[in-house]
Each structure stands twice: as C-alpha cells, then as structure tokens.
Image (cartoon, rainbow, N blue to C red; front, side, top):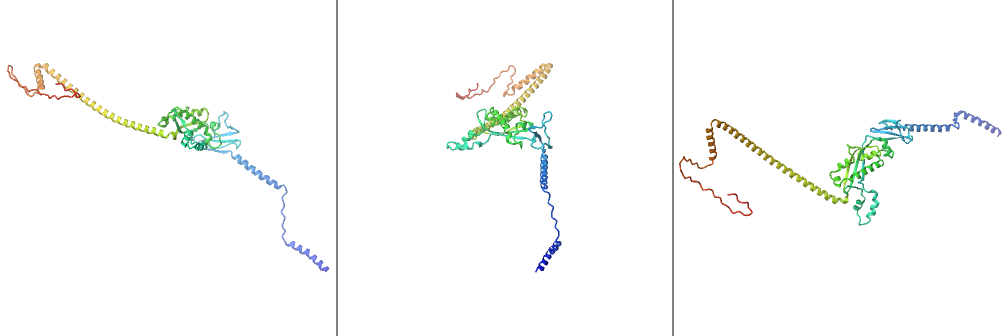
Length: 394
C-alpha cells in the first residue's frame, strides 16, 4: 500500500507539468501607471476649452444686410472715429469683439417704416372688467359705456371723432435712434420702441384737430389736415419739428389718415346730417345743370341777335354807301345839265310817291273838273273794360 501511494504521488506532478506545456501561454496586459487617467481628463477639458474659445471668437463675425448699417457698442459706448463721428458699418461681412465686450445693432436706413397711431380708434380692452360692472345696472347700456370710454379726439367745434393715423418714416440717424428711441435688443420695428413716436404723433393730431371743424375732417378736409401735420415742401415744420427737437433720428416721408368716423352713439344724428347734405348737393348739381342750360340758351339768343344786328348794320351801311355813290354821280351830272337832272329827279320822286296811288288824274292848265274821292274807312269802336288796354289813337 505504501508503494502504491508513493507511485501515485509521483505521477500527478508529472501529468500536470505535461498539461501546462500543452496549453498556449497568454500574456497578461500591462496596467497603466496610476497617474495616466488624470492626464486624459485634462486633455479632454483642454480640447473643450479650445473649442469653446474658437466658437466665442468666431461669434464676432456678423453680416450687415442691404439697406442697413451696423453700429457697434463696446462696453456701453458706441464705437466712433477720432473725431467723434460714430462708425457705421456698411453692408457686408464684418468682425467685432465677441459678447459681452461688443454688441452690434442692425439699423435699417432705407426701409420705410409705418407707425400706426390708433390712440383714438381702439376698443377699450382695459375697461372690460369695468364694463361688466357698469352693465350690471339694467338701466345702463353698452352704447352709453362706449360713448364714455371709447378714445376720441375733440374737434374745434366741440365734436368728437374716432381717427387713425399712419406715419410713414425712415431712420436718418442710427445713433440718435438707438440712443433715444430704440430700447429692447432685437428687431427695430418692435412696438415698444415706437411708443414715444406714437405719443408725439397723437399730441400733434390733438393740436391740429382743435383747429379743425368736424365738417372739414369728414367731408373733404383730410388733405389739409395731412398737410398741416407734415408738409413735404416744409419738412422741418409740423410733426417733424417735434421729432427733431428730441433728436430721435427719424425723417418723416408722409402722413395718411386711414380712418375718421363719428362715434356710434351719434350715428343717427350724423346719418341725418349726411342725408341732408347729399340732398343739398343734389339740388346744387341740378341747379347748376339748369343754370348751364339757361346760360347756353341765352348765349345762343344773344349771338343770334348780334348776328342779325350785324347783318342789318351791314345792309344799312351798303345801302347808305350806294345812295351816297348815286348822289355823287347825280350831282356830277347835275353840274353838267341842271334842268335835265332836275326833271329826272322829279320824275323819280313822283314815281316813288305815285306807285301806291290807285287813281291818277291828269288836269290841264286852266281845266276844271270834279274829283270823286272814295269815302274814308270807318273803324268800329268796341267798348273797352277798365282792365283792358286803352284804345289806339283814332
């Protein structure tokens, strides 16, 4: 037993050694030193910082569009030349120091902007809660509330009108616009930045309507009101003068009244006046037509009478000329043979006198005869009333 056990123990290490020799040898990986992980994290952070820096530097490039200028603000002040004139970047690609050092504002110079002045033509949305309280009383009506709270402008003859105005303008001074008008960063057409312009336009409209009657505002006076607010021939007067005094950097182009109407509470009265005005205008047009017709007829009659008088004057002139010529010829013949011409003139005269005589009696010298003359014509005289015209002379 002891020999068998010794033999088995000697055979086991030999078998294991042969098994290890038959298996492939696998090399164990080498582990990095303990400090290599910190180096990789630092390298990634470095790359990240470099990328952020490149993006930050690249954010300084900006594009100025057509019809715009770029104004750079650096640390709260606009970038200017040595003479103090602000730098206005033309259209194209430019570069500025990235935010928060520099900030660029794009100001449209050539684009026409429209300011809607609806201060006197807006629904009182802020009075909705008050309107509900007002209408709780059954004696109150919505028309009464609108008549009280609707925004309106007062005319010179103490009437009220709803009006809406459109002011067309463009930016003439970008720095003045950014300094005094422009407030929020972003689009320069934001309604918030136009509040000052709208207030000034509304003030000038109130002043102008205080010198205008309701008839002028409603019937044919819009052009005059627009001219008083802004006259292109005198651009430094009217509404433009207020903009220039405040250095807003705005140049007006024109003013247009978009809407003018009376309040709904006075709708019936204004419609009645409008109907009467239309009727009066129709009567005036009809009277003008009749006057033109009568004038044309009178001119025709006058021209006809003038022509007839001119023809009669020509006839009389020709007859007088002919008679004068005949008399001149007769006088010349009379000087040559007075007796013959005298007998000729006497014969012609008797011929003119005797052509209407029905009976002619020739009496020799010393001859006596009885002439029977026809009785005169008798006229029948009719009795006349006191209202009729007097009878003709007998």
